Length: 437
Ligand SMILES: Nc1nc2c(c(=O)[nH]1)N[C@H]1C(S)=C(S)[C@@H](COP(=O)(O)O)O[C@H]1N2
Ligand SMILES: [Mo]
Image (cartoon, protein in one colour):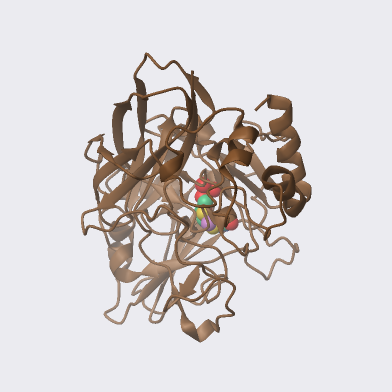
């Protein structure tokens, strides 16, 4: 398919997905996301649209929309975050294209941004105060950043953060919210102090159940009495060795949009629990009741529901550890590959609070899978790197799929998993398109 045709389809898809489906598939269909699974799309129409044959078409799931049709460009840029795709500018939300997540440790400029409100202005780290309070703390205390540095051991850990809504764009029917594709994830190195050292210094009462954070960002309405977000984690997660109060990311100040000058990092859970512009932590004797703690925010149905079902808040549970997932960071989707050459394929995989046991690669739409070489994590709750190579049997259109399995034997689904009203926890396999010539 010529580039101009592809752009034409892309922009038509943006405006009118049903009409775009009609152009691509020559018939009327349900509105779907381009990367979702359609019923009965014609192979001939697909090959024609792609402009090349599909050698493994016999294994192609009915209705698969080729990964080659994913849209990737954006006219907006954020200073210091060049290359990120801006999904929204008020609040600022920007995701990282998969091929820019190729580094083993995510550089500051490629860390995604997910803001619920407006970042604070004129932040002064010298005067910044972190207050520890709440009904289940023995001695409420206020710390400057210098106090934290002086009083507690400094720790550096590589920690993986993924927005609970990463992958939301693929759910059908769609869920409102940022239409993340694959890029609301990153794994930088953070330096700071252990949350548990600070909490223990202040004294955690025996009835403590949860911690909650507050940040200095402001609610979109501008109302100073409203919080943009105030979430938290059960006390056991808060007291883990890897839960940090961090002032540095990759040895530098944390970028303003990622929480400068201080943020909480509780990795492996929806990144919404990792409070930015952190100025207060409360130790609670109940589940924290801050903004966006209650269902339907960051919650999923207790039991699976059919797509499009209305679910009562009482029938939802708060998301805790994130599911197993992987990303192909090389090659970039859409590359052209010489048939005589091997193609290196690599990326990262992560599994919430647990570890990844294996990452498998398929070039035939999931009919067969090859294991990749998987490294251990730099430390607990960091993502793991994997790499392998593939060679293609004949010219044509291929997709490389990656599928990770965690230590408990749970695998990523090939199709979009359990639909839920807010579009969380899509851990379907990542796919990249390869044209072999
Ligand atoms: N104070 C504050 N903390 C916050 C948020 C926010 O809007 N305000 N967004 C949360 C959400 S939903 C996510 S996914 C992560 C995103 O972190 P990042 O922007 O550094 O990638 O921050 C979390 N912490
Ligand atoms: Mo998020």
